[in-house]
Image (cartoon, rainbow, N blue to C red):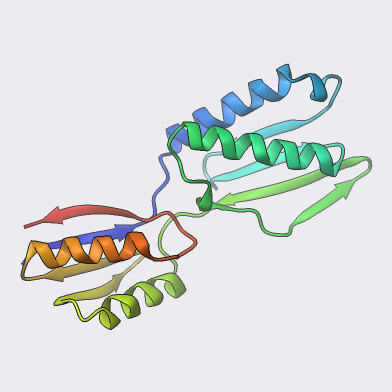
Length: 163
């Protein structure tokens, strides 16, 4: 029976390239001249650490990261900016978590949308991905089109198409 998987994966190498280019841009920008801003990626926990002097620079760094991710063909929706930001002395530190996998709430919404569409496909949650299967490939392609039109606050990829 034909099937495919709905996943949310981030290419770690492309993300590392985007962060390295963003770091170089920060070093070369005139408005960051003399700044003690730091930008690092922890590859094990997939977390971006930002350390800077004020909120204006923090917003600029976040904007630079988003732009660099887009140029590397990564969707910035995978970043979880959260509210955790704290000051130590005169510095502001912010950790940005890179979200991977389809969490249970989004998976439930995807499964509900597929069932409500009356397509002749079945969707089931498997760990951090959703497997969609059906008898016809056309139905699977209609399900992919439905998912692309949906709003899920996650970048979704469609992989492992098997016929």
